[in-house]
Length: 271
Image (cartoon, rainbow, N blue to C red; front, top):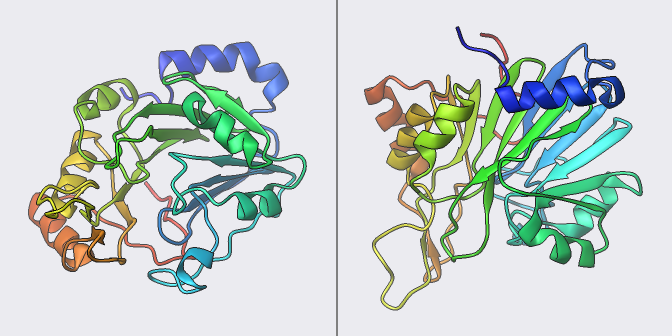
Protein backbone atom coordinates (compact mmCIF):
# COMPACT_ATOMS: atom_id res chain seq x y z
CA UNK A 1 0.00 0.00 0.00
CA UNK A 2 1.27 3.47 -0.90
CA UNK A 3 0.78 6.25 1.62
CA UNK A 4 0.42 9.92 0.62
CA UNK A 5 2.99 11.09 3.20
CA UNK A 6 6.34 9.83 4.41
CA UNK A 7 6.96 8.97 8.05
CA UNK A 8 8.81 12.28 8.54
CA UNK A 9 5.94 14.23 7.03
CA UNK A 10 3.31 12.44 9.10
CA UNK A 11 5.31 13.01 12.28
CA UNK A 12 5.57 16.70 11.50
CA UNK A 13 1.86 16.87 10.78
CA UNK A 14 0.97 15.24 14.10
CA UNK A 15 3.12 17.82 15.88
CA UNK A 16 2.00 20.89 13.95
CA UNK A 17 -1.54 20.05 12.87
CA UNK A 18 -3.30 21.98 15.66
CA UNK A 19 -1.52 25.20 14.71
CA UNK A 20 -0.94 24.75 11.00
CA UNK A 21 -4.54 24.78 9.82
CA UNK A 22 -3.80 21.79 7.59
CA UNK A 23 -7.40 21.17 6.61
CA UNK A 24 -8.49 24.78 6.78
CA UNK A 25 -10.70 25.66 3.78
CA UNK A 26 -9.16 22.76 1.85
CA UNK A 27 -12.03 22.13 -0.55
CA UNK A 28 -10.09 22.20 -3.79
CA UNK A 29 -6.65 22.06 -5.34
CA UNK A 30 -5.54 23.73 -8.55
CA UNK A 31 -2.14 23.37 -10.18
CA UNK A 32 -1.30 25.84 -12.95
CA UNK A 33 1.68 25.93 -15.24
CA UNK A 34 3.12 29.42 -15.54
CA UNK A 35 5.72 30.30 -18.16
CA UNK A 36 9.23 28.80 -18.43
CA UNK A 37 9.75 26.81 -15.19
CA UNK A 38 6.99 28.44 -13.15
CA UNK A 39 4.19 26.49 -11.45
CA UNK A 40 1.40 27.70 -9.15
CA UNK A 41 -0.43 25.62 -6.55
CA UNK A 42 -3.66 26.89 -4.98
CA UNK A 43 -5.36 25.08 -2.11
CA UNK A 44 -7.72 26.49 0.49
CA UNK A 45 -6.56 29.99 1.34
CA UNK A 46 -2.95 29.51 0.21
CA UNK A 47 -1.12 30.08 -3.07
CA UNK A 48 2.34 28.63 -3.65
CA UNK A 49 4.53 29.79 -6.52
CA UNK A 50 7.52 27.74 -7.65
CA UNK A 51 10.23 29.42 -9.75
CA UNK A 52 7.73 32.06 -10.87
CA UNK A 53 9.13 34.98 -12.85
CA UNK A 54 7.62 37.86 -14.79
CA UNK A 55 7.90 38.27 -18.53
CA UNK A 56 10.57 40.95 -18.44
CA UNK A 57 13.45 38.58 -19.14
CA UNK A 58 11.96 37.90 -22.58
CA UNK A 59 10.64 41.38 -23.26
CA UNK A 60 7.12 40.31 -22.36
CA UNK A 61 7.14 37.34 -24.75
CA UNK A 62 8.53 34.29 -22.93
CA UNK A 63 8.72 30.91 -24.68
CA UNK A 64 5.26 29.38 -25.25
CA UNK A 65 3.53 32.58 -24.16
CA UNK A 66 3.00 34.71 -21.07
CA UNK A 67 1.01 33.55 -18.03
CA UNK A 68 -0.17 35.93 -15.35
CA UNK A 69 1.87 35.48 -12.16
CA UNK A 70 -0.56 36.38 -9.43
CA UNK A 71 -2.35 35.25 -6.30
CA UNK A 72 -5.82 35.89 -4.89
CA UNK A 73 -5.55 34.03 -1.59
CA UNK A 74 -4.68 35.44 1.81
CA UNK A 75 -1.65 33.21 2.34
CA UNK A 76 1.11 33.43 -0.27
CA UNK A 77 4.42 31.61 -0.51
CA UNK A 78 7.14 31.18 -3.10
CA UNK A 79 9.55 28.26 -3.45
CA UNK A 80 12.88 28.71 -5.22
CA UNK A 81 15.00 25.98 -6.72
CA UNK A 82 17.85 28.49 -7.20
CA UNK A 83 18.47 32.18 -7.81
CA UNK A 84 19.31 32.41 -11.51
CA UNK A 85 17.26 35.19 -13.07
CA UNK A 86 15.06 32.82 -15.10
CA UNK A 87 13.92 31.21 -11.82
CA UNK A 88 14.10 34.08 -9.32
CA UNK A 89 12.46 37.44 -10.02
CA UNK A 90 12.55 39.53 -6.86
CA UNK A 91 10.41 42.37 -8.21
CA UNK A 92 7.62 40.05 -9.32
CA UNK A 93 7.70 38.13 -6.04
CA UNK A 94 7.56 41.31 -3.97
CA UNK A 95 4.53 42.45 -5.93
CA UNK A 96 2.68 39.13 -5.67
CA UNK A 97 3.65 38.12 -2.13
CA UNK A 98 3.05 41.54 -0.61
CA UNK A 99 4.11 42.34 2.93
CA UNK A 100 2.80 39.11 4.47
CA UNK A 101 4.07 36.57 1.95
CA UNK A 102 7.45 34.88 2.15
CA UNK A 103 10.00 32.96 0.12
CA UNK A 104 11.03 29.45 1.17
CA UNK A 105 14.44 28.49 -0.17
CA UNK A 106 17.50 26.44 0.60
CA UNK A 107 19.65 27.97 3.32
CA UNK A 108 22.48 28.61 0.83
CA UNK A 109 20.31 31.16 -1.03
CA UNK A 110 18.61 32.79 1.96
CA UNK A 111 20.96 35.74 2.49
CA UNK A 112 20.87 36.72 -1.18
CA UNK A 113 17.06 36.47 -1.35
CA UNK A 114 16.69 38.53 1.84
CA UNK A 115 19.05 41.16 0.42
CA UNK A 116 16.52 41.69 -2.37
CA UNK A 117 13.90 42.83 0.14
CA UNK A 118 11.93 39.60 0.58
CA UNK A 119 10.93 37.73 3.73
CA UNK A 120 12.74 34.42 3.79
CA UNK A 121 12.40 31.03 5.44
CA UNK A 122 15.69 29.13 4.97
CA UNK A 123 15.50 25.34 4.96
CA UNK A 124 17.96 22.47 4.96
CA UNK A 125 17.76 19.49 2.64
CA UNK A 126 15.13 16.92 3.65
CA UNK A 127 13.64 19.20 6.35
CA UNK A 128 9.85 19.37 5.74
CA UNK A 129 8.07 22.70 6.18
CA UNK A 130 4.31 22.94 6.78
CA UNK A 131 2.31 25.90 5.47
CA UNK A 132 -1.47 25.57 5.52
CA UNK A 133 -2.41 22.46 3.54
CA UNK A 134 1.10 22.10 2.14
CA UNK A 135 4.27 20.28 3.09
CA UNK A 136 7.42 21.37 1.25
CA UNK A 137 10.67 19.42 1.25
CA UNK A 138 13.89 20.42 -0.48
CA UNK A 139 15.85 17.53 -2.03
CA UNK A 140 19.16 17.39 -3.92
CA UNK A 141 19.62 18.74 -7.43
CA UNK A 142 22.62 19.71 -9.57
CA UNK A 143 23.14 22.92 -11.49
CA UNK A 144 24.90 23.18 -14.85
CA UNK A 145 26.82 26.26 -13.69
CA UNK A 146 27.95 24.61 -10.45
CA UNK A 147 25.73 26.83 -8.28
CA UNK A 148 23.63 25.61 -5.36
CA UNK A 149 20.24 24.24 -6.39
CA UNK A 150 17.46 22.08 -4.96
CA UNK A 151 14.37 20.34 -6.25
CA UNK A 152 11.08 20.50 -4.35
CA UNK A 153 8.65 17.90 -3.09
CA UNK A 154 5.21 19.48 -2.67
CA UNK A 155 2.67 17.41 -0.74
CA UNK A 156 -0.90 18.64 -0.49
CA UNK A 157 -4.30 17.03 0.06
CA UNK A 158 -2.94 13.50 -0.27
CA UNK A 159 -1.12 14.25 -3.54
CA UNK A 160 2.57 14.67 -4.16
CA UNK A 161 4.41 16.64 -6.83
CA UNK A 162 8.04 17.02 -7.86
CA UNK A 163 9.53 20.23 -9.28
CA UNK A 164 12.99 19.92 -10.78
CA UNK A 165 13.90 23.54 -11.57
CA UNK A 166 16.57 23.17 -14.25
CA UNK A 167 18.52 20.33 -12.71
CA UNK A 168 20.82 18.09 -14.68
CA UNK A 169 21.05 14.32 -14.24
CA UNK A 170 22.53 13.29 -10.88
CA UNK A 171 22.95 10.33 -8.57
CA UNK A 172 20.12 11.01 -6.10
CA UNK A 173 17.06 10.11 -8.19
CA UNK A 174 16.75 6.60 -6.75
CA UNK A 175 17.08 7.86 -3.17
CA UNK A 176 14.44 10.53 -3.73
CA UNK A 177 12.10 7.98 -5.30
CA UNK A 178 12.59 5.52 -2.46
CA UNK A 179 11.84 8.10 0.21
CA UNK A 180 9.12 10.18 -1.46
CA UNK A 181 7.73 8.38 -4.52
CA UNK A 182 5.46 7.83 -6.27
CA UNK A 183 4.45 11.27 -7.55
CA UNK A 184 1.18 12.39 -9.09
CA UNK A 185 3.19 14.57 -11.46
CA UNK A 186 6.81 15.53 -12.02
CA UNK A 187 7.54 18.98 -13.46
CA UNK A 188 10.88 18.48 -15.19
CA UNK A 189 13.10 20.59 -17.46
CA UNK A 190 13.55 19.05 -20.89
CA UNK A 191 15.62 21.35 -23.09
CA UNK A 192 19.00 19.67 -22.63
CA UNK A 193 20.75 23.02 -22.85
CA UNK A 194 24.48 23.11 -23.39
CA UNK A 195 25.94 25.94 -21.36
CA UNK A 196 28.92 28.20 -22.13
CA UNK A 197 32.32 26.77 -22.84
CA UNK A 198 34.83 27.24 -25.66
CA UNK A 199 34.42 24.91 -27.41
CA UNK A 200 30.77 24.31 -26.51
CA UNK A 201 30.50 21.03 -24.55
CA UNK A 202 28.45 18.18 -25.98
CA UNK A 203 27.14 17.28 -22.52
CA UNK A 204 24.08 19.24 -21.45
CA UNK A 205 23.78 21.22 -18.22
CA UNK A 206 20.02 20.62 -17.99
CA UNK A 207 18.01 17.40 -18.31
CA UNK A 208 17.65 16.35 -21.93
CA UNK A 209 14.28 14.99 -23.12
CA UNK A 210 15.48 11.40 -22.71
CA UNK A 211 16.94 12.13 -19.27
CA UNK A 212 13.68 13.77 -18.19
CA UNK A 213 11.86 10.58 -19.16
CA UNK A 214 14.43 8.56 -17.22
CA UNK A 215 13.99 10.78 -14.16
CA UNK A 216 10.20 10.59 -14.27
CA UNK A 217 10.28 6.80 -14.56
CA UNK A 218 12.78 6.46 -11.70
CA UNK A 219 10.68 8.82 -9.56
CA UNK A 220 7.60 6.68 -10.34
CA UNK A 221 5.74 9.74 -11.58
CA UNK A 222 2.27 9.06 -12.92
CA UNK A 223 2.89 11.74 -15.54
CA UNK A 224 5.62 14.09 -16.67
CA UNK A 225 4.84 17.78 -17.18
CA UNK A 226 7.57 19.40 -19.32
CA UNK A 227 8.93 22.79 -18.29
CA UNK A 228 11.98 24.93 -19.12
CA UNK A 229 12.16 24.68 -22.91
CA UNK A 230 11.68 26.71 -26.06
CA UNK A 231 14.59 29.15 -25.73
CA UNK A 232 18.14 29.24 -27.10
CA UNK A 233 20.72 32.02 -26.89
CA UNK A 234 23.72 30.85 -28.91
CA UNK A 235 26.56 30.56 -28.46
CA UNK A 236 26.24 30.70 -24.65
CA UNK A 237 23.06 28.65 -24.23
CA UNK A 238 21.86 26.13 -26.82
CA UNK A 239 18.94 23.77 -26.26
CA UNK A 240 18.38 20.54 -28.17
CA UNK A 241 16.38 20.70 -31.38
CA UNK A 242 12.60 20.56 -30.79
CA UNK A 243 12.80 19.25 -27.20
CA UNK A 244 9.02 18.76 -26.81
CA UNK A 245 8.76 16.54 -29.90
CA UNK A 246 11.77 14.52 -28.73
CA UNK A 247 10.24 14.13 -25.28
CA UNK A 248 6.86 13.00 -26.60
CA UNK A 249 8.46 10.46 -28.89
CA UNK A 250 10.68 8.95 -26.19
CA UNK A 251 7.92 8.99 -23.55
CA UNK A 252 5.52 7.19 -25.91
CA UNK A 253 8.14 4.54 -26.66
CA UNK A 254 8.60 3.94 -22.93
CA UNK A 255 4.96 4.11 -21.93
CA UNK A 256 5.22 7.27 -19.81
CA UNK A 257 2.21 9.64 -19.82
CA UNK A 258 3.06 13.26 -20.63
CA UNK A 259 0.75 16.19 -19.94
CA UNK A 260 1.95 19.18 -21.91
CA UNK A 261 0.51 22.35 -20.40
CA UNK A 262 0.89 25.66 -22.18
CA UNK A 263 1.35 28.61 -19.82
CA UNK A 264 -1.91 29.34 -18.04
CA UNK A 265 -3.31 25.81 -18.30
CA UNK A 266 -4.14 23.72 -15.23
CA UNK A 267 -3.03 20.16 -14.50
CA UNK A 268 -5.63 17.41 -14.63
CA UNK A 269 -5.87 16.03 -11.10
CA UNK A 270 -7.92 12.96 -11.98
CA UNK A 271 -6.35 9.66 -10.84
